[in-house]
Image 1 (cartoon, rainbow, N blue to C red):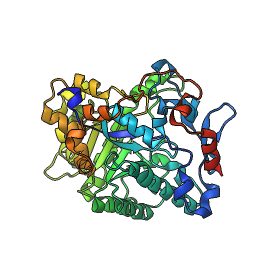
Image 2 (spheres, rainbow, N blue to C red; image 1 turned 45 degrees about the horizontal axis):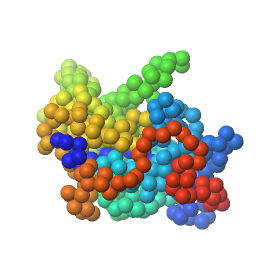
Image 3 (cartoon, rainbow, N blue to C red; image 1 turned 90 degrees about the vertical axis):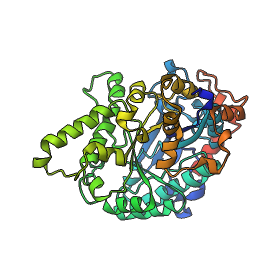
Image 4 (cartoon, rainbow, N blue to C red; image 1 turned 60 degrees about the vertical axis):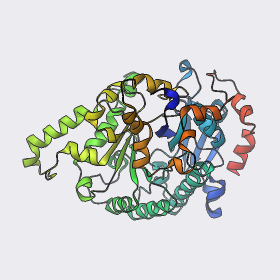
Length: 426
């Protein structure tokens, strides 16, 4: 299929939260304790909440920057493409990149909202978390109906409250909940306990997917303190492999047959070996370990419960039927450093040259629509959803790669960031 004809829905993108996030949705009694943006003496913008300082890390917002300028140093809003944090500019960037739909993971709260969970005042924590969720659903996703798959943050510290929040969000049309890949590393009961059962029950009842993002446990695989950064980046998918094993062998699939789990940013090429390994493990060891999947193999259980995704994974595409063609979705990862925006359609078309149109349609949008109960065609005609059609809407939008130029992004969206910071911290 030609790149222009693809319909592309990304199940893993990211947003950088704007400084005014909490102005509208947080109750007045908590506003003086809300997370706020503060500009540091070095010019970088950081979030402050509950005594913690959280910088905007460079690699999290490098869309449109040359690769030689990538890095982990803190950044300011005017060093980013406005599409990282401004919803109207995000839509323009999506159109220019040929991307119809997007599911956006959070940044400063952590992928699983662990920043809010760490607050001693749990009433404040819940108010801030719910304000974030309402902003994400109503202001971010609500600004462009049909263009986003809304996602909620979990109430990590209380499974009953977490279940209540899932039901509240489901009533607003949310069918994805971001969650930690390993609650034990955050000091909570593991996936192998019954602690989380109220949450799993609510998610099954409300048809909400458990979206587990790489790094959401607060830990990444690192071999040695003096190992180069390349080691950590190479081994990042191992976090998702660990989470897959933990969840597959846990009690959750057995006790909650309707639970669905999305593994985000972990790639797919490793999955055929993983499935062979879990089947071999079951065959050789289940009689003494006590695992019992009835008449199914672990690989069957995996394909029933798990969705996987990739950015650019030629091996995964070659092995797509060993993985399960209904278990693969595409991701763009905008604005992170692994993203190929704005040329993702061309990159995918090249590596998928031997993939049938039917298989490619499942991977690029149909599986995402089915798993996340997402129907963009209810908002716009299907023929207007292709890469070519979306790019036509973005005619004239600047996507040229540029080096950082102080004030350029600020000028391009016509906003005074100083005023915006002042409003957010008032």
